[in-house]
Image (cartoon, rainbow, N blue to C red; front, side):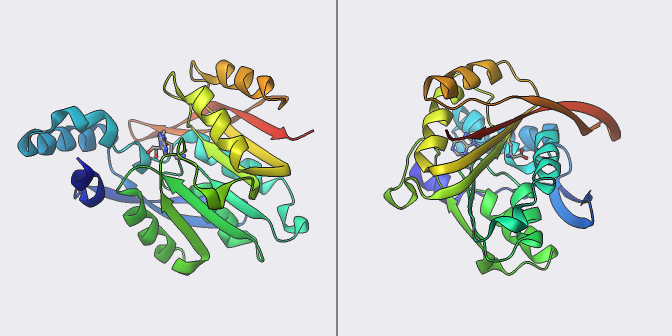
Length: 240
Ligand SMILES: C[S@@+](CC[C@H](N)C(=O)[O-])C[C@H]1O[C@@H](n2cnc3c(N)ncnc32)[C@H](O)[C@@H]1O
């Protein structure tokens, strides 16, 4: 199975979307349709004789999720420019829109984005190029957030993630993963569209001594080609 995860690539139909955050515009190549992409993936995996990999390889990374828009908008309100040379990590980054936005607006900072899906790096490279961002401005690592590398431990000033709480194991796994990577005095920001595991995640963070005052913002979701309002929770944790 290692080979399918390492070399896996599908030619999905994609579309380029224009996303604006304040004065910053980003061109984002994303999947044209998540449902069509999952159907195509299922056909492909059946032909390869491993349909059981559908869940692991489903291309959730390739969608512009409302939580990514909300996180990016929220980051744009934080005056991060005044905070100097931050080290920023985005986990479960998918198309990494919040990180692309920060790359366009901050200098001096160092960025790492991670995701465990084997196709993320291809989309990321294309979207960096589309937006005129040098490829070496972002360190991308394909990794499972539950497997912490020694060079990541307590290293980042700001650790962010959007829409990363959608399986029952995620609240505990993610609380451990995020806090293990955040330096003392650092901050963690997670956005979520109100999925069932959001409360458990807050409970897990509280059990580790991290609390926040969640707020709800309204952003945009695209549903059947229409832009509709969508509420998203913002959880901004600061260490005591
Ligand atoms: C719903 S998508 C959200 C993507 C992106 N953060 C956004 O909001 O547009 C969830 C992402 O988390 C990634 N993911 C899920 N479990 C993961 C894990 N254990 N380690 C790393 N990435 C993971 C998926 O591959 C996917 O890209």
